[in-house]
Image (tube, rainbow, N blue to C red; front, side, top):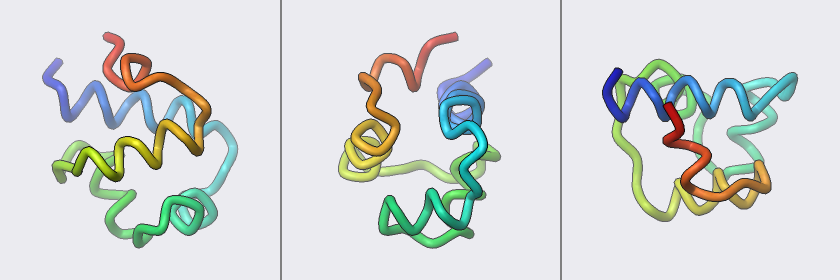
Length: 66
């Protein structure tokens, strides 16, 4: 599994029962962008990763655990 797929799987898992729409609003990104991140189809920025970690209350390493 490569990094985008690992990131995608972990975001989906850590997001839990929050909808993509609600979570993307909290992050300040579009739902379409979040959907692409969660499918591994789009790269992201450090800033967005920081927002994801803040929103999920996790360390960045948790987003890349295999």
